[in-house]
Image 1 (cartoon, rainbow over the protein chains, first blue to last red):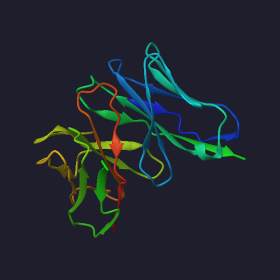
Image 2 (cartoon, one colour; image 1 turned 180 degrees about the vertical axis):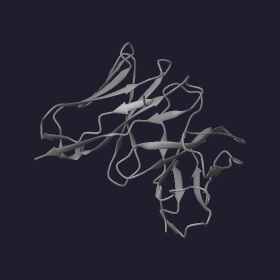
Image 3 (cartoon, chains in turn red, purple; image 1 turned 30 degrees about the horizontal axis):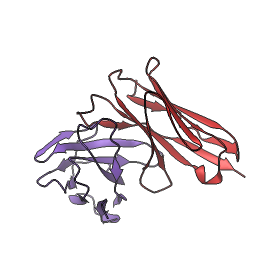
Length: 112
Length: 114
């Protein structure tokens, strides 16, 4: 089993739709979780950190489910500009180990 | 402005040659990382360093070498032993030991070996 797994998609949705991505992780000791966005041929950029209590930033909501070992990203009212690859990132040990593992990414295409 | 700089953006080499990719940061971050990304794939960890003069192998370290002589710099050498070196290489930095500390990425170096 991979340490961090995502459904690669692509997810094709119309503008205005709500879409959700999940990401599972294998190490129950993981403590830090993030969502990154990567545009074609560019470097990944931090979208949001994922906190235990869940967190929201505008149209984006991130949640953590420790019991089932997954994190999720919900995008409401999708925009054309949301089209990108979304990467989940998990620190596979304690916060001091510094080993951050990326999922393979989920591709989102928002259509007019 | 604080940031992380990779150079060059594009690099072309002949098979059998070693090549060194530069990565410099002025964010005062302790930790630095090298990832490789192949087309349509996620990022795979090559090497990481949590402090000066110390570094650890990632998942795909074979054929690569690094050094961390200065806090600001973490160069990656792609040796001739690396079987498939053509890829997009990303350097990142972050705070060591800080819970929920995200990574900051450089713009990447696209290496093509023919």
